[in-house]
Length: 164
Ligand code: CA2
Image 1 (tube, helix red, strand yellow):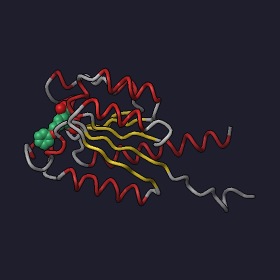
Image 2: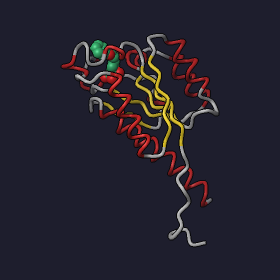
Image 3: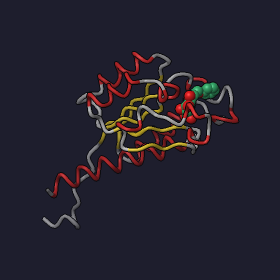
Image 4: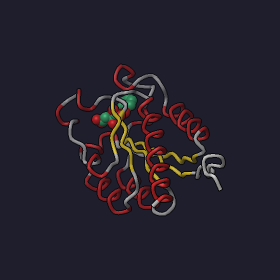
């Protein structure tokens, strides 16, 4: 069959979205740094883009490192990719990095603010070396850019696997 005329239907990917500590306060505190949009609205926008891209998303916010580690472990062979704003744990958590590394889940790290323009302690990420990439500084749009990048990366990987 000519694949240009009848392209294979796009596979539906399942994406886990994790929001780290204090992100439940989005839109309620420090709007000059983190914007005025609530986390609920951010999640609605993520859901909308996911639907348009034929992807499924599950979103979890937690203020607890162990809960985030448990969620990453539970993603093994359940979700195809991870979109994560680890928040303050970006700069401290070997445990989150080890969990991502252990289940080898394709991961995109996102930040609302540009962490490289802020205090020196925010410049280092424990997560970046185990992520496909990092998107930082685009406010709530960082999540959408990150989700699109993750879905595109998963599609590219599928396509490469189908031709090799
Ligand atoms: O810019 C980001 O997305 C951060 O991950 C946000 C973290 C910060 O520790 C990182 O360095 C960069 C902080 C999240 C706190 O979220 C709040 C939201 C509204 C009000 C107060 C805190």
